[in-house]
Image 1: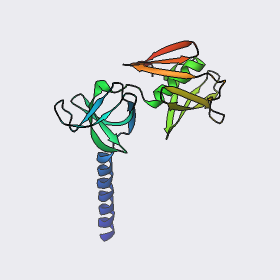
Image 2: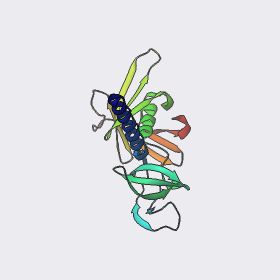
Image 3: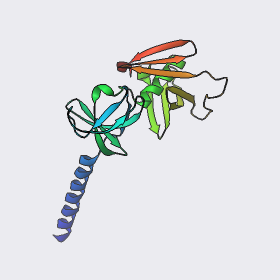
Image 4: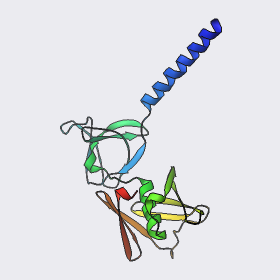
Length: 186
């Protein structure tokens, strides 16, 4: 009987710890600030006090959304809230997908992406079944890319690829041509 009680106790504790971990788990998705002088507020209300300011293009971790405001995190720790309209709709993975899509003429919705630190890996399966994988880095408004185990195209003779974000649209420019993607294409 004591063994059965110990097993039940261990299972109960494991269940409790699992639920505690899931409650404290936060999203570490990242977005860009798309407006100048964004105020991070202490609470998700317009009249709450300003804690600090962010600038256009700053990358931030986002958490939960409340009353039209999105929680800003730093290393997973709550920092305050900003209004949803001040954040970009696009993640770094979306930006890299748009760059690879522009270069290779594939649709971004067929691509998968994974991020490890600053490095982003984008892959898709071609119609002949071959898997193509690319590495991507974002520096400011520039997309740098290379094949998975090859060199990054950052040499003086390599084409430069830039992006701009306006609302729910991202425009990628390579050489003299541009292509615009809507958020729903991802």
